[in-house]
Image 1 (cartoon, rainbow, N blue to C red):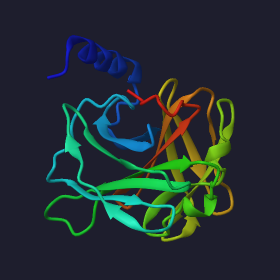
Image 2: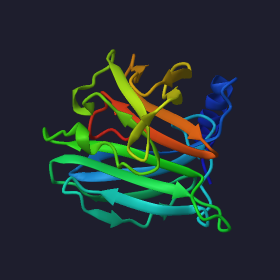
Image 3: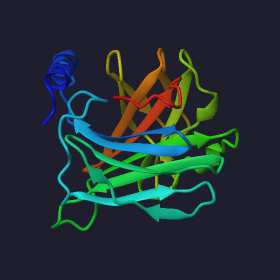
Amino acid sequence: MAGPAVRTAVALCLLVAGAAGAHEHWILIQRKNGKAVLQIGSGHCFPVSDLRLAERLLTETVILHPSGGTTNFKPVASDTTWMAEWMCDTPGVWSAAFALKKPQDEEPFYRARALLIVGEADDPSRYAIGKGLEIVPQTALSALKPGDTLRVAIHENGAPIEGKITVTPEAGRVAFLSTGQGRPAEVKLPSAGAYLLTTSRRGRTFALTVTVGLPTEKMVP
């Protein structure tokens, strides 16, 4: 069970979230002691997770390596999150993803992804998977710092499309942006922390977590 401090933090976050009120799901991923440490969270106040996702809904838990290879991971349950970790010594773009699918459905209704850049071998061409609905950064993530602007596009099966993006920052107000085929959205990153970007189309939702200016040893709470 979560202690009083955790319950208080969740209550305060829900109060601050106010009008947003959306229940989102996400991945947080940070590098620590040569390992990638991952949390799968869910709740009304990103990045505080107040609900552990039902195991029967959780699927397609995958790590994509800089080499292009993939590894399935089995997350471990904690009080309100699912956790996983792995060695990530290879420089380049790493990503982790999961999906949520109802047992009676053929396709997931929610997909989430987080990207982790190790070393100086950043490669923005590796940010996109090219399958299904996804939010794709158009700015090199390794170069981002607080105060910068991140350009992002919405892709469907590898092609840019028009759509709406909701930006939920770790601290601050929720923003609502639009993007077109040749017009990426511009996400303001005023402070260090995590940012959750979500978009929906035809009953499907995609969520991308971006972190800016966080020390590698600091895990987002």
